[in-house]
Length: 265
Image 1 (cartoon, rainbow, N blue to C red):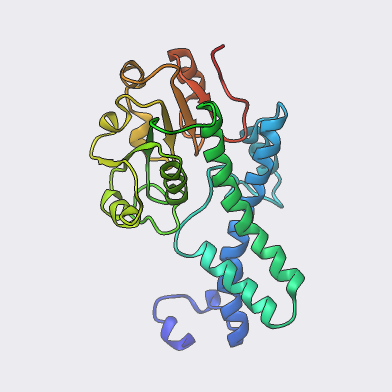
Image 2: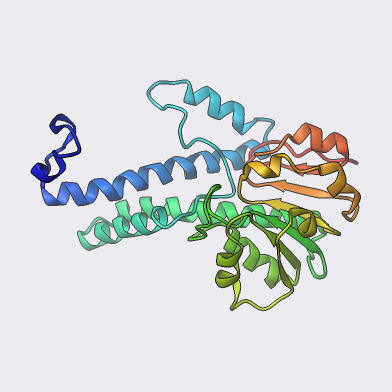
C-alpha cells in the first residue's frame, strides 16, 4: 500500500501503522474535532448566563499555541456525515472492550451537540411566550455547512422538527440544499414551505433562525426584511455570522450564540 501511495505522496509523509492504529486514527481525528466544537458550545451556554463573550474567549484561548484557533467557533451545533457516526463507532468499541467510562465520555460529545441545538430552539420558543402555534419562522440555511448541498446530520433538521411539532409555520431557504431539505422533511407533518428566495422566506416572519453561514446572508438587505416582518422582530444567529450591532440598530432583537442578546425594551 505504501508503494502505491508513494507514486503521489513523498515517502517521508507516509505513516506506517498497524491496522488497529490506522482504523482508530480516523475515528479519533473526527472525534477530537467534534469534541472541540462541543467544548466551545458548552462554554457558550455559560457565556450567555454571564457577561462573557464567546468570540473573545475563542480568540484568547486560540492564541495559545497549545490549543490553536481552529474549530473554536460556537454555533447551533456540528453536522455532516462523519462526526456523529465516528464518535458513536468509537463509543461502541469502548463498550465492546469493557471501557464504559470512556464510552460515556465520547457519547457526551454527541449529547452536548444535540443539547446545543435544543437550546437554540428553546430560545426561539421563549421569545414567543412559549407558544409557536401559527408563528412564522424563517430558517436560513439547511446544509450542515456553507458551499455544499449536503444536509446529512445538519442541525437544521432537528430544529425544523421541533418547530413543526410546536405548530410553527416554517419557511426554509438554502442556496444549494433545498431539494435535500425537501427529502429530509417529507415525512413530517405541518405547514412548511421551501423558498427559492431568502426574502420570500422572511416575508411576514415573527423570527429568523440563521442555521448555515452562507456568505450571501451577510449581503441581505435586512432593512428591507425588517419592513416585512411582524413586530417585534427576532433574529437568532446560530453561527454568529452577522453584524449583530447593526441589526439591533435597525430594529431587530438579536440573539447570538454565547453572547448577551441585544433586545429592545
